[in-house]
Length: 188
Picture (tube, rainbow, N blue to C red):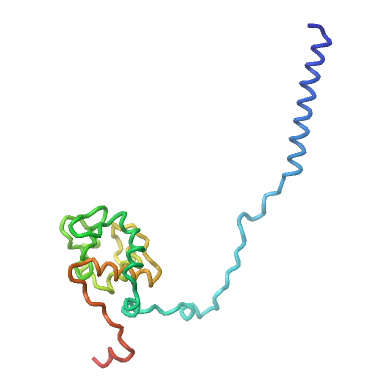
């Protein structure tokens, strides 16, 4: 191989390197965008007026009112997320959580064959419509120290639908409570 051919190969290699370096420099200048001073997006939020925080919140509708228009079918759809930890049919036994068949009206933390948390065992009473509403809204706020990791259902309508569905899972479902009119409770 003579020196002329070696010079050709080295010239081609050097030329290729120069072209690649020029492309690299050009792409940096073309596609470069400076980093934002403050990362993220600005989201416009309507601010509440001072002193009216409580007035801005809508009043909670009593569960009795919501149960009157609740749907068992929609409740079954919403309760599908509960099926990962709970069984709904009679006699299937517990999974991660206790069996929910016949839960409405049952004593709290009383289903045989399931080891309830100490916090839930300490809660007395029955799973009434009101108790289930509080529990389904936020289990950890209702019973601090519970082992249940479910975040809760913030939507009142969904909670009512699930409660009506759970009530239907029984040989003898409890009658739904009726909403009291204002002043009715004062007369009793």
